[in-house]
Amino acid sequence: MISNDSLMLYAKLAGFRLAVLANRACCNGDFSRELYDRLIDGLDAAIDRVRTILAMERRLLDGSDECASYQLASESEIFGRLTIDLLDELDIDYDTREYRINGGRWTNALMVDDTGVHVDYPDLVLLDDQELGSLAPIVRAIRRETGLAIRADRVDHGHIRLLHPDSAVHGVRRA
Image (cartoon, rainbow, N blue to C red):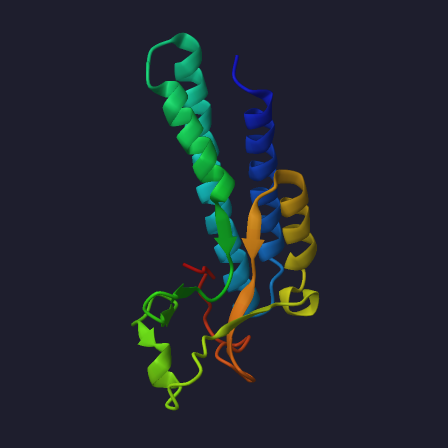
């Protein structure tokens, strides 16, 4: 039998995806629409991962694939680390003291700080409920019901924000 947990997770994710699609229709502004689009894309990826888990569970049950248990464990681990990023993507390589924003070019943090004394990396600033708008309760519900990690941070260099709500947005990750 296929895991009830996997089926319930699939149903919850599909239901949240429909709710996000319905709420997106009421958006007023490009920034809000972009956040909704990124959440829909992330939910699609999560749903695809759960479909793969369900397929592995079927293979394990019917004995058609002797490697299914290893693949199932791997897929479950990947799903457990899945994170939906709604805004800026920040990769930091602490070994080389470099960072990049939104998949752009790597920047040497020592070159940004011309004193060479202090390595200053950009910070991530969490969007508040007002900035997330109608998406805030949906994000909280998805996290609570599915355990899926969703981040909505923006890159911040000191007091200067690189991303303004009227700008296009990209996902947040630390390497």
